[in-house]
Length: 396
Image (cartoon, rainbow, N blue to C red; front, side, top):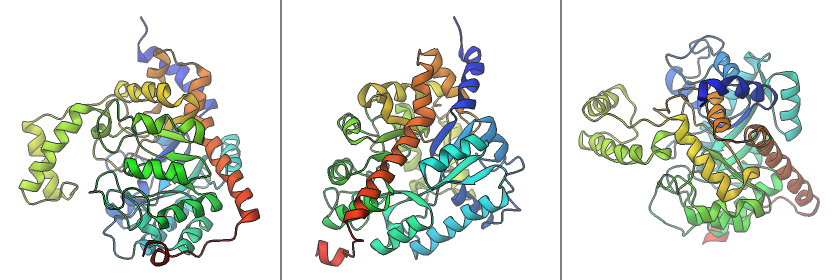
C-alpha cells in the first residue's frame, strides 16, 4: 500500500502546472506586530522559519502560485481605515522589494499571467467590514487600491452584519449590510463569508448577484465550530458559483482541538489575559497549560477530511484552500508552514482524487470565481451608478 511519501512526487508535478491559490495569509499583520513593517528586519528573501510561517523560499517549495494577502486590522483598532491603508502599503512594499518573485494581481487574467511568468500573483483581502468605517466610498477606494475581497466581519459584529463568534445583534445583514454587498458586486470585490454568522451567510447569498467566497473556513459537519460552514450553505454554492476555501487552523478542523482550546482559553482568562493574547507573558501561561494538558494535533489528513466532505456537499467546482498562515499560533502536522501544500495534495491523491479535480481545487476554481465577479461588475456598472447610501438612512 502506498503512503503520502509515494505521492509527493506526483503532487509536486501537479502543483508545478496548477499551483495553489491560497485564500488567506496574515503576513502583513505579522510584519506590523513583529517589526513595525521594517522589512529589513524580516526579509522574506531569507529564511524566516524562526519567526514566520512565510518566506519566499517556502512559498516556492509549497508551490504557491497566487496568494491573497490579508490586510487585516482588529475590530478594536482606532481608525481602522487608516490602519488598513498601512497594511495595503505593506503589501505594496513587498511587491516593490521582490519583483522577481511577487507580481501584483487584480484580475483573473493577472493570475494566469503570473503563472505563465513563474511569479506568485499577489492579491489583497480586507478582513472585516469595520475597515470601511460604514462608508461605501471607502469601500470603493479599497477596491481601487487593489483589495479584491472583503470579509464582512471578523470576530466581532460590525454595525451592519453579525459575526460567527459574537452575540447575535442584527439577525444577519441589515439594510445597509445588503447595500454593502450590492456595492461590492458592482465593484467586482468578492464577498467573503469566513467569520460571519450563519444568518449573515444566508442573507449575503440572497443579496449577492456575484459568486461569494469563504477565504478560510472548513466544514461544520466535520468539526462543530461556528467559524465553519454548515451543509445547507455549502449546498447553495453551486447555484451561486462561489468557492469555499478550507482552512488549516487546528481549532477549526479537529474537534478535540476545539474542546482543548475552550479549556486553554478559560485558563488564560483565569490568569487575567484575553483568550487571544499572544504577548510573551500570556504565551508563558499558555505553554504551561499545554505542558500539563498536551494539545491535540491536527494533520494533513484532518484537513483532507474537510475537503472530502466539502466536495460531497458543494461539489468539486466550489472548493479551494485558505491556510491562514501567520494568522494562527498552531498549524497541523505536515502543514507547518507555506511549504506544506504538497503534503495535502499527496494525501488527496492517496484518497483517489483525480488530477483534474485537484487542479480545480488548487487553481481553477479560485481563478474562475474572481473572473465571474469581474463579469458581474461589468454588467452592473453599465446600468448602475455608485451608491451613496448611508447607514444612518438605511438602518435608522
